[in-house]
Length: 293
Length: 299
Image (cartoon, rainbow over all chains, first blue to last red; front, side, top):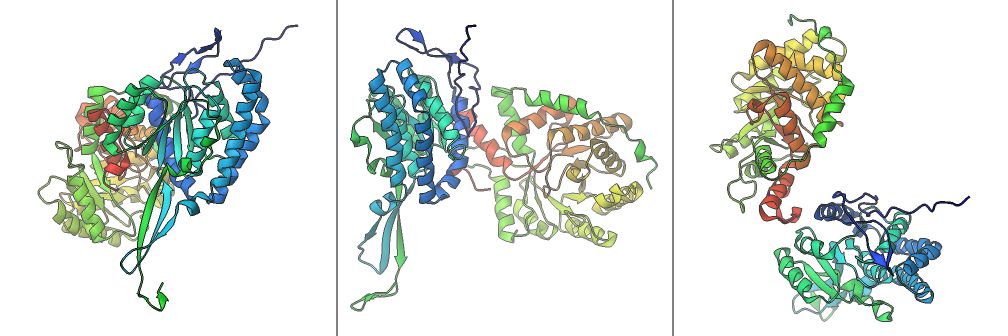
């Protein structure tokens, strides 16, 4: 007897749960003329809910030890490895060739491992002890920016997404991500990986939907501390810059390309989403005898 | 002494209550109705601090906040009252003078209510003498559970007398009563004994105010009103921290008791963090932009 295939319902990922969009809307992206699925067309309220989840998860995530965050990133890579075939199939479904798809999945796993390694190292690299003219011990350390909204690369549905999420969370931030509009399948499957890999709910939230519709809300929300935009549409960038001024959101522009290059493996991707805190610590005496602290 | 046998208070249909509450939670309030509801909510809040760590300065901050909810946006109402422990009443009265904000004080060995009648009366008297406009008393849940309804009734009546002109809110602490039937019974006792308000909870134990338990109390108020023609106020307290929930409470009041109850003479929220959430929602309504706690006062 022939069997009817059981198809997956692609839902969104907010606060560690998989709700449907509150709007009840969906869209139907196609690849090679074939329907990819009924994908949630997220609304501004979904974004709002995701931001609330990201905000409430942020303190706890940043407070975890760097070593523990590292373990969790490594765990994501482990689970992703176990699901390799599924991701490869989805990439092929979305129009990739098989060798390309395999390469993309392998690189995604490797990239997670790469940033897992950086979790307990970037602070040392980007911290400094600063020479000052007064009797102060003056030092600077990076701290997470907070809640980061990410407009993920449009052309790279898995590797591009992972390349944005990994450095963001490695640095103690939480994020709300809008996945690629036309090739969204891997983003939701990645969410399934995240929900089974010790990432606390709310640290990563993934929405699918229409960029144009959501960009104004992503850029204007007062509780979003930084916005990462992957792409090169100048009218979108203008909207973002204008709306982001209200709370002086940090706006970071990145590529929408293939993300295969190893320039996406750099601790500077972590530091771009850190704020530098400088402390002036009074010391009793600085003299010929040496430091007094 | 109470004249009624409170064992005969009406029984509550638990399934029916839950069913009605479910309908309130699925309602969507938008635009102008939402805006009005949010302003109304602000004006119904008893801004509360009841911590062991309270200090005079904390009370001053609270009183300032009650009158200046978000000064960068003009035209906002004040809260209805501030709610403090009796020893802070004097400070609070001085701070809110002339602003229309009332001072409510908890009394009668809040929150447990375990003390002698003398202490409870004195507690009330101190609050009133210091200028409290409203007194929030707790009932003796222990006596209530032992079936000593007359004791509970007499105690409320005595406190009511000690209140003089101050309005009396009677806290049932529904989280310790157990069943809706008992909530109804306690509501009936409190209203018969002279309560101006009945209030769900101290906020010190969980569960505090919930929609179902509030509905049970609203129904009791309705029946009391039909029976005697006297209006009694309602104050859910504890656990109401977001605007959406507050609006659902307002819907429930409107549809159970009617518009007459929709002002701070007859309906209050006992809350501390609710005010900021409502403010954030109001600013969202006005600006179209989702807000952040960073730009509002600390609770």
